[in-house]
Length: 362
Image (cartoon, rainbow, N blue to C red; front, side, top):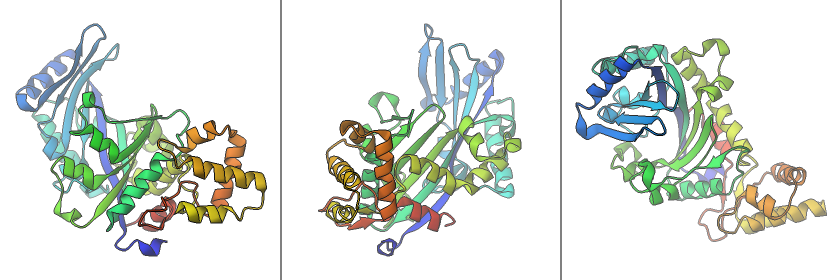
């Protein structure tokens, strides 16, 4: 029950935002020249004449919340890609902090970013660039790290959203110092227009030696809905697209609904996660024999390594109609088919919907 979550709290906001602007040949050369002035922070990601793909990155302003990339992909024009961590850019050195946009702090953010970019002779201000992506984020804080561990295990057992694929850190993508450890503490599925990312934020910050004092005795499950411009449009007033502050404010305002939209499709809003033996007893009370058998079979199959709801339904030859009927019944009795191991020190996990609904406002 939620009462067992002593010290639980939540924080919501924006983690990162990325922007894009097309560059002329001259502008591209100028910015690249400025980027290479700091050689230790300059990286060639790809330089492939045959594929027509070129990508160069600067990490010089990374500690100030800004990363730059100049790139050309095939027949597309040269462009400048700016990745901004608003909280960091505004001077908050706590890497777990999130940005809650308003008129005053957005004006300050735009001024800070534009000032930094002037040194690279960037031709336009941030407000005139196109918004490519925004990460709508929730930090769920627990005093007991076992909760973070168990919730991540539930993600690994969830449904794969149609047309989405699983994503893992790899040695060659240079996105994690220790890909194996990063994969252990995270879960991500993605498509062309969006991704859903759940991970142990405290573990991630420890891996990069950026663990803040604010997280002492705390454990953080971070949930990120990483939305491209196409996905962003779904959650905002159409007339406001292009007005960056209003877009970010609406994304945060709709944060709970955004996350629940993804979690529902992943089968993670059905109810509490009980210990397997307790869930079996609950399912034993289902009157319809066929439905009850399917529910038992699904729970049992989920106990195997690398099993998730998607491949379990396929392996058991359960049709979409029957699968929906079983999941609807789980929801009706208030539990998830994804259970907590019998030997877990935690007897039950509250459903994520309860945590988000009750604490989305902090």
